[in-house]
Length: 258
Ligand code: MG
Image (tube, rainbow, N blue to C red; front, side, top):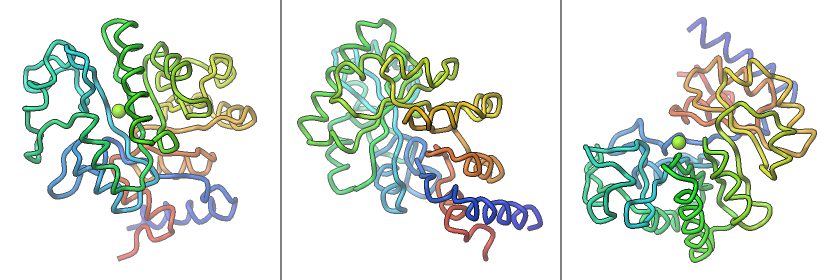
């Protein structure tokens, strides 16, 4: 309780500094820490939307036969994402009983949601496969008319460059891996950084540097209230979290209330 009060007073101080309004909530792999949900499930997307998250993050792979599916790990239930057919992958079931979703199914479900779609392309085995996956994703986004609600992220610099090349100009593309400065990313046409908290703590000056360059700053994966407060106080634009309700409470000043 003492800790909660302390955190809350830190947030109130951040509000006074005007840092709060800008920070937005991104649910990591959707809102999955709740009944009936699972990481990267359609339910997690719908639940992230239902609690008013600014964005819902999800991970995608390209199957052996060139279709895009939503899942985090390189292999799931013994099936390698890149070496397994689309039909086999989408027949697998997630922890909540849902089938592993295709990107198309995910986008169908997103029609009823207003949340932004934060798509992470996982690091694939070759740059060619990443380029092909980016092309397929961008085409599907166009088909659905979702151009204005997409943000692309990746640990692969190659994939980020492909999104910059293939997505419509102005689409946010954020790099995850942490070793490049904002100026270096800007040089590549990448519009923001989405870095681990440890990177931003090592280089807090990158936050202001990015903002001066007109870039966006996101941080992951922040589940601890004190860490959230540090990022809010430092003016980070987006926080990706497995605890979107906690972050929302912090931002609305209701954290710690009974
Ligand atoms: Mg991810």
